[in-house]
Length: 267
Image (tube, rainbow, N blue to C red; front, side, top):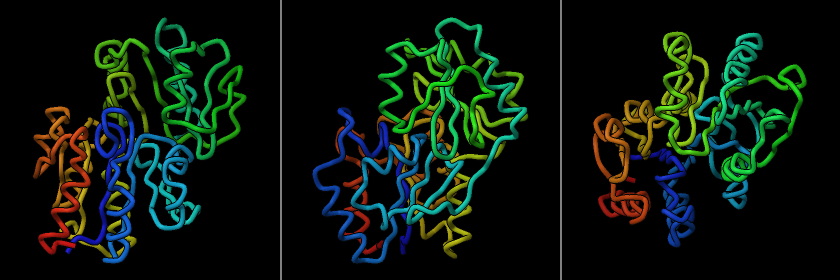
């Protein structure tokens, strides 16, 4: 029986307009009645997820920032912090590259440099982060870093940003999070590792978990649960890593598949 369901947000649970399916609340209520836990698992900041799911603040588990911090009932369950000196090195590594903008994610706030904040970046930031602070330098950031993200407004992150981090491929987790973003976290800090940590904490087996995703920052999740679903619109390597394929996000594939679970008596 499925007891825990985790879903990515953008390109997965949210439709092509960035909206939750109309059936979402009804399905969540039915899952709750069946004793099934739901967890949004996203590269988004916790407070961004909380804005989308305020009514579920005390019901959901929130896997945010690509699994580097997990919260329940507003309390941190676990996190994966980047060593400060290394974080500064990575954060500042792109300062001289035109068209690439760096963002440091702390546990509470997202920080960006004052001299590198084009309107395009601010618009994109608002999609994923709620608490944003502009600083003059890395040294002005008071929080522990959990993720460093790099953005290109041209949507060519795979070509423009990702190759630049080749020196860190072996020592850090460097992942193409979307066409616009590359995320850097500690090696092994992924949504998949967060799923495994939750399984251990909750006493669940992979056969009791389902996961949904569409992009490269979801790929480790596919190996952490038996019911691993790539969306029909997913990046090809994610489909290869998943055991099953769900209808596209435009077709509300996550909700349709969960409905299928209930109809089949899987949860």
